Length: 333
View 1 (cartoon, one colour):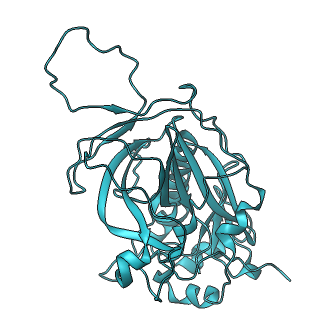
View 2 (cartoon, one colour; view 1 turned 180 degrees about the horizontal axis):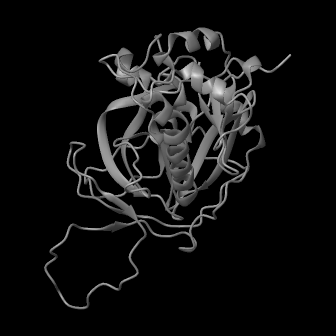
């Protein structure tokens, strides 16, 4: 009997799954092991780079700071009145060689995908944001979301919103449901928020959770690896799904057209798993599970999926000068 995809969620939080009623009916009785089940084979990700956080944010999310490599330029020897925004550098712990490329099995930062599928989970609060918005984030785990959808026009740039993880006893039923809460019940605090633009390159580590056959799979790589997956999905989606939908094809028509075998990375998901419609494979990256083929809007239309509609940013882990972004494109119940 095939395995049923599961995760550790107590509740669903992300909106993607709730968009198609028929699919939810198939997976509504999915159990609770997915994200945490992937950590059984974890090993430690080496911290191999340091990042510089250049920020110009205010208390709103409209100002976009930059996450880049620390500058190697020596400071001036004379007193000069600065004419640019201040730069705060996180001291490197080893070298500036960056994170090795290529998707590999191994450990991810602890609990980085716990917030993928529920409104509360078990964990610890994030550090407080520094009062100075130009200061780097203190070491810790934070919730994160894509603020502006990824586009092929700027394939190595990603604008993200970062939130604190807080105890449910502090933030209450506005963010958590099912109290009374114990101290270990945490969720994403709705405010404050810090907005950053991340360069997807070798200086950013990536954790990506996907779905392979009837079970979860998690791998790690660097920002350039993620950029490659987003570009591959975008190109294939427009050809295999977006174009036919625009020409009048139904989702059933598109799924049926893949019955003979994979097309540009898309293949029919195992129907015995009751997990989704299609999987998308790009090299050694974790397969991306499509539980629906389109997005959903409040006006009732079904716009095409962008890559970051499917590949959800869940969290940001900051430790020892290394920024790790956690993404999830697996099974939601």
